[in-house]
Length: 159
Image 1 (cartoon, one colour):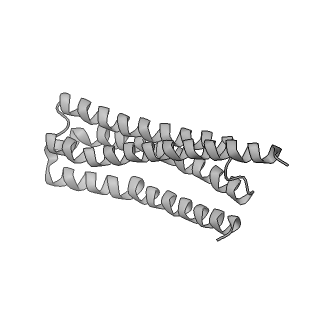
Image 2: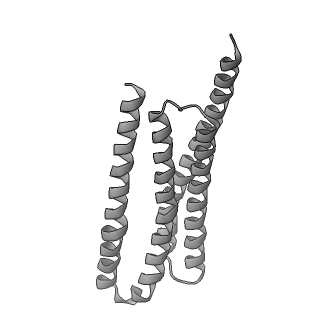
Image 3: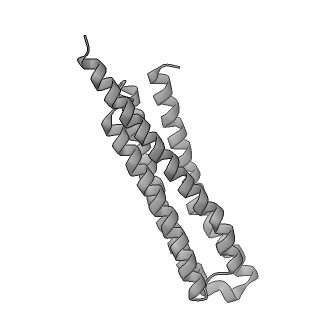
């Protein structure tokens, strides 16, 4: 697979993930929220705070996709191992960590103010762990891309 093909497939995957995000955030989350409220009307006052929380978590996700698109463009331009890509990957790592920690903190806050169930908090730990793991992996890849960029720059000066 050459650089152009790799960039093409990365862009297709990013578009697919963006569309999946729209389906999840615009349809599935409200649908399941309303379904819960229809069976348990006592949770009606929780619906909008939870909707707002979940929609706020979409912002870093789409920023990650935008940054991923920038990396795909640089790969298409045969600029895979650059300090710019290392910085973008570090930004992606920070966004993922911020999103995971925000989601966890808000789950704890909602539990504290009586708008969450301990079981939901425990189940949400899977989502938090996934976000933290993604953050750590992208930070490691950022470090490796930075090192590869340094080696590439050293080799450009070698005759």
